[in-house]
Image (cartoon, rainbow, N blue to C red; front, top):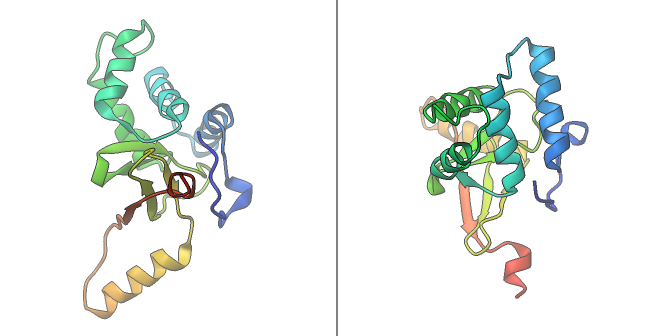
Length: 163
């Protein structure tokens, strides 16, 4: 997973490298009584290793190219993604139809805005509870009952903008 410069609202939960991320998810699964099957662990590892958003088709290709879990039954990748998303270990970036590892997999399920670089494709989980709360509050003021939030801001990351 790539490093980012945002400030985490839960620093004790924040994970920045792939190995530590996978270990944190394994620990969270044990604590919550969840089953991290070999295919789920493989998909999780591939997402963590990518270090940037990765599409389901690319995950399928990587699973098929090996002889590990899921190579003979690629549809299991989608079930693994469903499990990982449902339990807050990965997020789906709707606008680019890709998946990223959650920066704090030990936290409860949560909504977060993302900053997505159009040049290098880095995705930063903008860990700002105020933004999420403000969107929720404004929606409710308008009589809307929110069920999920997806906020993705596209532009250039600091590194790309300075080039």
